[in-house]
Amino acid sequence: MNEKYLYKRLKQKVIFEKAFVYAIYDRIKNDPFCNFFEIKFYRDQKENLYNEIYSIIEEPDKFQHSVCFSYYLPKENLCFRRYIYTPFKELVLRYMLIIVMVELTECGLSERCFSARVASPDNGDKCLLEPYSNLWNKFVDWQEKILSSQEKVDDIEASQKENIVKQKGYQILVNTDISSFYDTVSHDYLIQLIINEFDITEDCNFIKLLKKLLQFRVTGYSFIDGKLFISNFLQGLIIGNSIEAYLANLYLKDLDEALENSGAEFGRYVDDIKVFVRDITDATHYIQIIQEFLFTKGLNLNTAKTKIFYKKEKMIEYIQKSRILGYANEEIEEEKKVQIKTNVKFPIDKKMDESDKYLGNDYNIDSEISNEEDAVIWAEYLNKKLSPKHIKDLNLTIKQIKKLRDIIRKFPKLCKRCAWLTVKFCFFEYHNSIQKSAYEEMIGILEDNEINSWVKARILHHLISPKRGSLSYIKRLKVNPYQMERMSLVLEKLASYPAIELQINTLYAIYETLESKREITDVVKRFIPKPISLPIIDIISQLTETDFSDHKLPVFEDLISEISEEAEFGEENYY
Image (cartoon, rainbow, N blue to C red; front, side, top):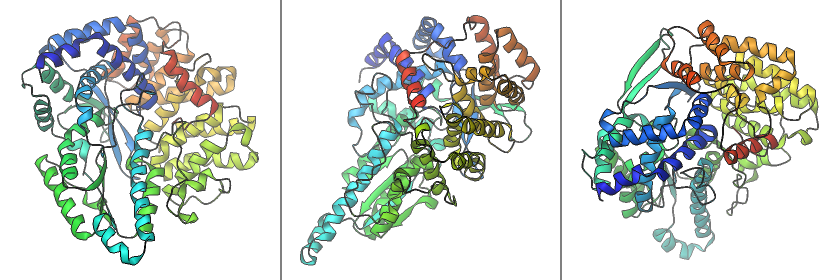
């Protein structure tokens, strides 16, 4: 590969234009956190941003990465996963590099790699990679297809079965993943892999810029003493930007090739690996192949999550649960055209068809919620089935709304779903008593010190998100002086909380209800803990450089219209 081609392609303005759209779309639609101040600022300063990025590409040695900040989402009941927020300028730069790499490497990735694949023509004008839900469902579809073919083997006569099983019959499912994958990716190994992939030198500008983007400083508040800290990010991939998964694909490309060349019936979604095998000997063989390749990269399998399923019924149950719970038990954001499937071709006992529990009409919404799976189904039912016109029992619905805070506490990984549901029931055209109950539950969650700060930031995200042709939800509260006054008092408390993501969304919520940017500066002085973090200082700087007085967020109409329509009509899992 000619280094000049990569460099020339990277500098073309069309690459910047694509990256700019992709970055905004992902920030608002897909990423766990969005800084709306930043989006507005760079929409107004787009040409200046292009000139600045062009200068960086010309002289990458002079580039100084802006400070990122960390925030935390629940991973397990007692543990959290650290996410990193990348400033918008650096996010656009990352997109530009990855767009160029995608153009040259996508066709070389294995078909058994299901994560972070290039978007279909229907989505390609707004996002680089296909939506998560589409790809995850394809991954699960592949597993169901394997079991479906196995069902046909089971149905034939015993005299013929032995030969077919020897050829193709898969009796065992091996499930494994990589221990702390994103956190342990070696930058040196990744850089060398990309150098080899494109046949370029380490001192070319493309690699120099990539190195600068991989390592940076991170700020946040310490759990130990509550004080601000700044640390260096020197290893791993960022959790918090969807495009990082493409770098993960490149990192594991040779593992996919090794499994494919060995004849394995495998599939991989990021670090989640499934292999269907005939017997335990094959299972051991493929696990050894995977481990051998991972050792060369400084990685290893997660032994606690490595499982072998021998019985078909257990395989079916596990696969169906994975469709509902999603990758790493994170929420699936269902798109309109991607529904959880109930028309699986192989026979399934009704009691094991988890999707029927909430897509069917016989689901008891008031049934006991004893585990995370029950909670997921309950939340999905509330979101998909309880539209304003389908409410039959007001008291029963209100009873469910009053469970939201407890569900967040008991099953923290459902916090994203529950954050959206509180907003949905509060602002959609439900009965007044439902809206009031949802508002009280929302205030209760925002005031609850035991609930993770990101959950509160996520509720505010929905309140401040722009709506095409209508007011944001936070502005609609101004119609009711009592509710607005209560919310204002809550926002003042939230502004003083030691969590940067919550401070930013709180400031934007206050900005949406105030009359001037001077008042925002006053709020920062009065409530934001001292010393003030660099991301908040950046917001103050952006306020002085941009006219925020119109209280409008300049947006791409096609992007925002899609997002707002999904939320307004309740046809999507908008969370």
